[in-house]
Each structure stands twice: as C-alpha cells, then as structure tokens.
Length: 174
Image (cartoon, rainbow, N blue to C red):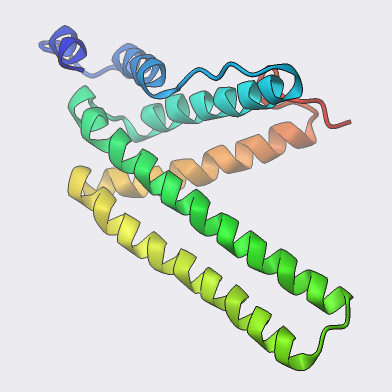
C-alpha cells in the first residue's frame, strides 16, 4: 500500500486517479477462489459483483488514496459482520415461517418470533455501531455518500437483473 501511496503523491484527485485507486483496491482486496464446476462459477459471479461494488463505491464516495487505505479494512469488517447478522435474521425467519406452516404450538411460535425480532434488533444495533466506526475513518459527508452509494448500487443491480443483465459471468436464472 505504501508503494501505491508514493505513486499518488503529488497527483491531483481526479476521475482517473479514483479509477486507478479503485482498481488497485480491487486487486488487493479481492481474493481469487479456485473451485471446480458450479462452485467456481458462483464464486466468480460473487467476486465480480464485489469488484463492481468496490469500484462503484470508491468512485461515488470520491475516496483519496489515504482515505481508501483507512476505509476499506473497516468497511470489509463491517460487511462481514453485517453478513453474519443478516444470515441470523434469515435463519430466524425461515424457522418461524416453517413453524407457522407446520402449525406449531403457540409457545414454540412465541419463542421463534422472539428470536426473529431479536435478530432484527441486533442487525439495527450493528448498523449504529458501524456508523460510528465509519465516522472514525471518513468525514461525515463521505459516510453519507457511502450510504447513498450503497443504495444506488443495490437499486442499479436490481434494475439490471430485471433487464436480464447483471455482472458479466452472472449465472443465468431464466
């Protein structure tokens, strides 16, 4: 990372610089997975989506190389925690849904309902603590831009999927 910082010293922040920074960050943060068959295709698609998101966010937030160096480790940790939390919410949802379909007794439904609401509450608490963590490495305006950019990226991906697109190499769901 120090070598990249030296390259950027003395250069003005521009669209080209942000693009180069995004590509450098992608190359440094995206691991390569070697799997056979369908697993390889699914991982490849996920990694392409992740690469697109990294480049998109870097550009939308207008990260400087110094900011990117501080931001991406924090953001990646936040994403990992967010994914785990979201997995917990979805697991609780599936269990509650199955219990309702199976006509489970009220005591079991109450327990599963509590677990679902608690999982959602944990996800919301995590969002608050992550906001504080992000504000430690970026100015508030750029954190706000991050939240807007994440939503913009999500909406663009949904639109692309509705149009039959997606990242290149995405599995065809038709």
